[in-house]
Length: 506
Image 1 (tube, one colour):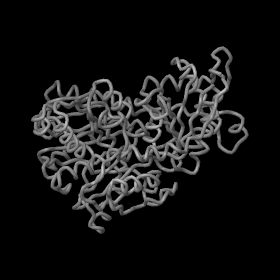
Image 2 (tube, rainbow, N blue to C red; image 1 turned 180 degrees about the vertical axis):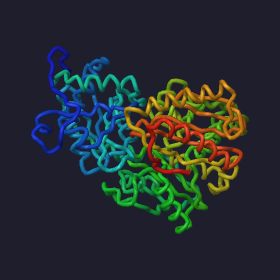
Image 3 (cartoon, helix red, strand yellow; image 1 turned 90 degrees about the vertical axis):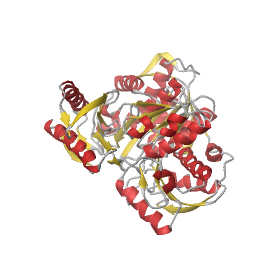
Image 4 (cartoon, helix red, strand yellow; image 1 turned 45 degrees about the vertical axis):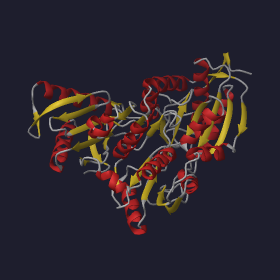
């Protein structure tokens, strides 16, 4: 039966309850700030309990009914944490109560859930994952139709539905689909096989990708040198985050120790990849994206690309892209934003500095998949017949900071970014200088990206995943200019009184 939009199930949803109390067993609790710009994340069980997760599933089912899905089919899967299966099952109960047909793919990485949405016939999706967040976090990435995922409008609507506590009812169905895993793994590399085998360090930070990445890399012809691929939800060494310097440094050390051809680091839910070259040098993912864009622009002349505002300025005037007639647009950071922009504009590929890469047909399925991205890197090396260090050397050198995250409370972070954006707007209008140079350009599509006349730039935006900001700087002229840009941004942020310690600094 489809969901009944006349009969309703009514819940009293609390914004907070204390774990291990009668109250937490009798009432659902859902912390409102867990609903973010393009996914949802909570500390579990402090910020959301199992009944709250059940209401989350019922709320998503209700939202799908509001969107016109008479009999919603929803793919569910879960990442590898001590509580993820329980979280998924609670969400599933909610979906069933709202009349959804649930297709459970079991233990999965997020791109496998995206793949399953298309493979099983244009299903909606609800993937239980906290990505690379520390153990103790849980969350949901949701989509009403592939390949795009919820953005701010849809997430705000879902939040409103869940917190209101009024959901549609229906008789749902459940089906376990373990066969999807093998179909997905075979699809990632397709018929591609390396002409010359490569020795590749595969690092997964003890996250879910340990059960997926080595198998795919071996299938396409790599000799896999595993690093922290045993699944362990305590993440004993570091969080599975390819942007994290501790994780990257561990990969660098292993590549050098093993004298490997390449190092690949995957994040906790498998939609991102980080790369270390044959000399043990870290290459930020935006520059890997530029190398892939060069290759694709040769295969598909005139193709369009979308990159996020954290990405290197080299995209703007790259000689290879220009020669091949390709264009590049800087867009909002966030997997949902990039996916949507890719599909709206007909771009061939999109790249984020964080390691999210998006490939539209015929190259990919229109979504971010760390394994598909890793295979594209292998294709790049196979076609070039050169080590990655040689390809890296073909790019103009710039001095880049890591992606830094100064603490800023959820209640203040967006206002802080708004104030800093206005402050830089005033500085440009008044002709103020930074590091003795005028401001040449401001990009305000997502926070503020300040570019000086020599090409040095800095970015401030609000994190969509944590109570923090995001700060990135880069200079094509000197390390001193890159650091000077950071110093200017940090001075302005500290003056707000709402910004705390950084997770890492240059």
